[in-house]
Length: 410
Image (cartoon, rainbow, N blue to C red; front, side, top):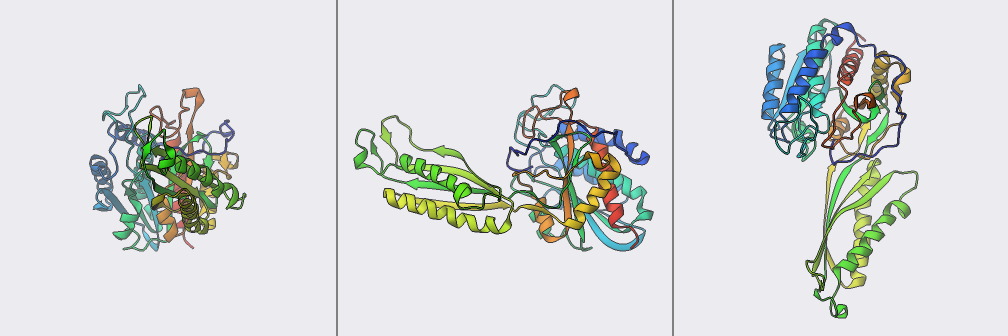
């Protein structure tokens, strides 16, 4: 999941009331899926460097008899399963990349690569999707259509979904629906988060340089102080969410970095700020950068300073199609019962699954993976992150169920 921390509304800690109902043939894949997840966890690779991971994925897909393309968007892999009956095409997506983070877990499958770790569960996503390929090949006689298994690089950054789309992953054959999942540390194992509409926010970045006139700290009247100006800008930017936006619209604007000056008694010439904007509404995402720059322009002009501004839109909001979300919910209820569904979960984190869902109807959903009884309580992007591997067959079963529902005879 891109862009580090992903705060959410606190959710009930209790697991679902009943044990997950994983079909026997899928339960039989648990050992294979867990083994692959642990192998990938021990050998993490950063975005667009997932060569070992991609080679292992391609080997498994080829062994299943799928049509396999490698080197898609550098390190991406696509496998195509043609069902026994004609029909539409479903895309299933998993991200493969790890994070530049040192692992602090003392587990047998801990990262063997210093400073690189699967701290967001992409190893699980890849293993689940490989397991889904195995399962759906065995069930191909039921499928009225095709399945594309898309193993995507670089979700964390700079984003591999859009390059894969630009290289034609949604065509030949044309994709009619898309599904993906994320193991989720804010949910206990046995719970599944699925909802229609906005699920994750945009992940945008702004870079701001405030240019003043430096001088001696004891003679501020001879300067144009960019530090004081930056302080005013930071405070004023908080009015974007509190005064410019409908309070019923979730918006976060955070400044995460400020740099300026090197000495206690010298006012510098320049201060640089880095920050992020998060919102669910696409129209709001398009409108707010201009309003933010208006605030910066006014404050710097009043101070006699100037500014340099760069705004980068990384990932758009991730928005689930209503019909596809209902389909995934049915598949999830068959596994965790209706009591295991959480339908109000959203996060202001970002995901480049959004690029797929902008182009075809689909659904991205969360699979709970924490378990305090096993000491698995740490959040994503932590050096202590781990997951309850009982989540793997749950995610696998929901993906397979969603595909079969979509590709059933109509």
